[in-house]
Amino acid sequence: MNQTEKEIIFLDPVCTHNIWGGTKLREEFGYPVEGDDIGECWGISAHPNGDGTVRNGAFAGMKLSEVWQLHPEVFGNLNSDRFPLLTKIIDARDDLSIQVHPDDSYAKVHENGSFGKTECWYIMDCPENATLVIGHNAKTKEELAQMIHQGRWSEFIREIPVKKGDFIQIDPGTVHAIKGGLLILETQQNSDITYRVYDYDRLSGGKPRELHVEKSIDVITVPAKSVEDSVVSALGLPENQLNELYSCKYYSVFKLDVNGNAAFEQNNPFLLVSVLEGNGTVNGQAVKKGDHFILPCGYGKVEMQGQMSMIASAVRG
Ligand code: ZN
Picture 1 (cartoon, protein in one colour):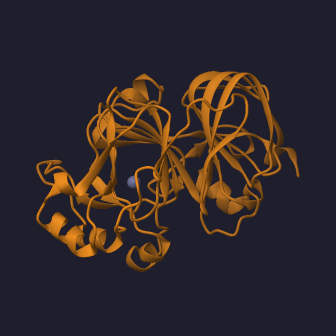
Picture 2: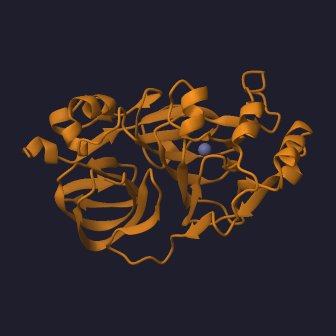
Picture 3: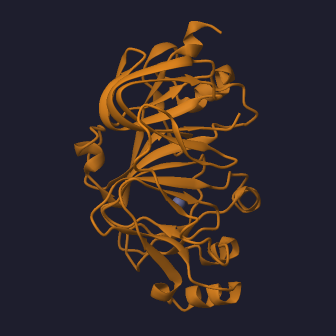
């Protein structure tokens, strides 16, 4: 293992413009992007629709996808033809469309070999009495198709209350939508396949955005998973340690709140880290709110200092 393989890899993210986006990603997080429709910051991404650039060190200036291709040892030589995960911050000024994602096997056949999309959300901030859409109320596939074809949206969608610090796992086949006012850290499979079920009859550039009704009906799970099985609170966890929030076959997600000093071993194939609040240092390097970085394979002991709140994720090696 040489030194370059053990450097912390900081990334310059890619931000996107969306009809439902806002201004927090520039004004609160300092990402250099103009406009008042900034919906997403793809903080750690090697996806062709938003491939992050390495900011520092031996790989400076390279796209993350190139580092993945040319230096697989940095990521533990995983058996995958593309970088497996994608981390985003989402600032929803308005409601997002009601949507659903396919799983790997459906996406492989119907979406040109793409990965499916399993994702999860950590609620970074939201107004009082915030809600989001997770699941639906149809009891059978027939009822599902009827509700969608007849546009019985208030009956169909299941809207639930959420608060800052909630964590929500969204398996493929789960109907979901972020509501206006929410600020979310999303950890997901590296995929951009979304089927839009309903878009509140909005217009974008004078036209409604495309819906994917039949594919949605194909992939929506009936009945939906219970609310209790979908949401967990990440509040009140011990400080200065990695707390696992959730683990599935694609990722493990951790909450880490540093208050003073924290130390742990980086034994995963690699660890993705996003700083959500505060600032401090990681092995002597300054980090602050809005930074996204990767601790590579074999990094070993991680020492953090400061006051900061982070979400980290790893693939299961
Ligand atoms: Zn989604």
